[in-house]
Length: 316
Image (cartoon, rainbow, N blue to C red; front, side, top):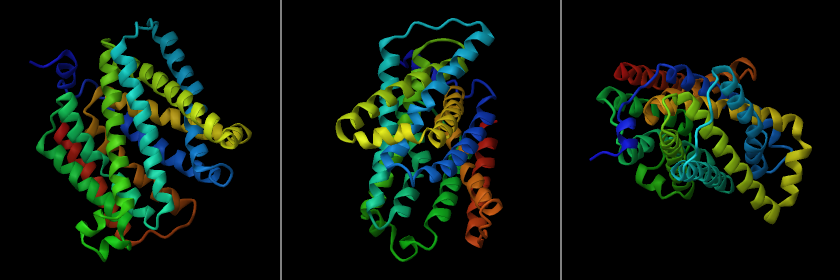
């Protein structure tokens, strides 16, 4: 017999707000990545990850406070399941980021990054196993087409063209990417489960509660680790507050949109629509950095957009 959490998860889409939330999440993520590139020259990779939570947490608190005051809702009583699931989501996201960062020291970082984008496929699998989420054939087709588009954009010109897939998977960076994708997928699944643990009818309110809890766990755990292992990086996170605060703001807004999407629709569906991030990233590179868009990038973009269209058609 299905549990209460599984029954609610199986209800699929609960509000149309998931769609604009997923699209905005992709936009904020691409925007945050662009700003974060400026920060990389001033802090370590670990520090660039820390500022997302350190400066994002106050923004998350403001968003939750504004929602509570505007809609005159009361904060729910937190239960043990919620705290456990929110903590798992927060730690999983940190570990996923560290796994991906580990590929920086390898010769095929692009390959690692590309394979992390299999997160969408893995999210569908984990959501089915943990939440009993079911997807239509069209949504599954959209996921496959979208991932193919992202892989084309990421791997064109890399060793993928010269090696078989089996050989490529033996690449350490590829394995790191797959592991990071799995942890990112689990992050989304446990975020959704945490929203269900609160047992309140307002899914967006639940998403903001989870956002605050997750970012608090991430801030405390990452700061504690750096305080013991790398105090210089911790100091850099504060001395670069002007740019770091921008990264934190965009990270919090992006996560608020992701979590709202997860709370109102299947995790994999939200992720596949959120892949429009790559469209925003390439448009940013073309319009602001004057980079020329190549043929394989146009083909990859068409596949990503086609995947989104198929997923949306299958969700109706």
